[in-house]
Length: 520
Image (cartoon, rainbow, N blue to C red; front, side, top):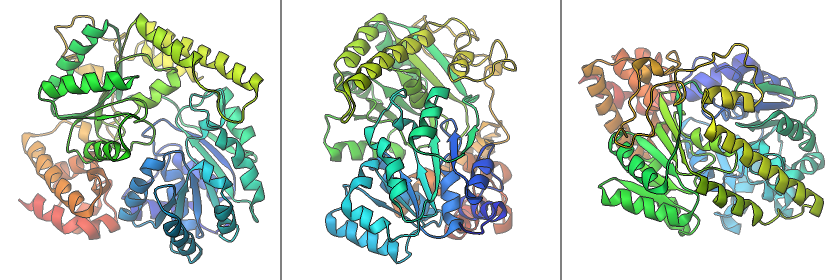
């Protein structure tokens, strides 16, 4: 293990990402990794799990290996790392055999700090030969809940990770990361991944910047509610989740007919169509994505301001991951669940007709079927709850509620929100309803008209620079950083460096352009 210290990690955090210190939970996990200890990090979406392995990768030396199921997003992740000055790579089926050989040889030659692979890659003979020659100080396992049949995304290939680790010439530190895991799933992660005396960091499941809402509506009422909601949020990015492909096509067509800039995403579309839709949404070229759950984990777009589910997900874990796509920058966002009893029939049909995962025994398949039924019961309990939705979620994931208020003033059960009145689709709430961590998000602060106008100009500049660089706008700077720039109005490079999210690498790359725009 490298002699890198937490101070080295903080310097890397500032240099590569522009942040002066870690968020709660991050420093504990990074410190454990640097000390050579395994770790299990359970952090809500938007809490910065990836920093827990990306920063160590920058200071440890060798090749950090990241196991992730998100093949479609690996290219985006590597491009974002490159913008931050970290040398990233990936191996997946989008590369042909020759390209894969080049990437592996370059990795052995020391070109990369970090490499992303899917869990299925671990069984490939060529990959095994390659990795046995590489120095791997850290193995990070993203979406680690996929190892457990009690979780919502069981993936049998995750069960092979422990054997893979044991086959390496030298055992690396192993860090498992997930956003949603009950205590039972956390125990499975530790046991099935073979974690050795891990630091277990559960930083909490609360997302105080998210307004949580539910409404029991017929399909026609859902469509009317959504149309009004989108109309009244015409300056914000949002995601509409629908269970079926047919539903995605219907709702996307309806919104498009109403003049909404919308794209759709489901498994029935070609790879090219799905890729184009995702890129247009992430690049802020369109503001509304209508999708099945195929558009789910790992979407890093931080400025999604709302997520609407047009039916019951199969579990509360699944729902909270989808809702968690909103407000990843810490700014205020809304998450709505629109459901009815007909959704239950659809969910039960999907559960009863799901194909058992490859490699599981008949007993395991029956246990998994029973578990999916229990998970659906938990989802229904949330939808029907008339008390605080935030407390419901925290209790579900096992958090101590002693210090949690009986009412959160930021969910549809704790405010005067009238979701059942279709004429009131604007869903306005009392000004006190939102509780936002304002120390983290400059965007949540009150803005002067001048600062708001400056933000719009900075956002336009960011869009142009991102297009030129071939990266999503948020990779250049987040909305929170642009708001902070607009509020602080720095005039020199040193002043710009004091803005959270601006580090030396981004300053060198984009500083002159943003200072010139601010000077206007």
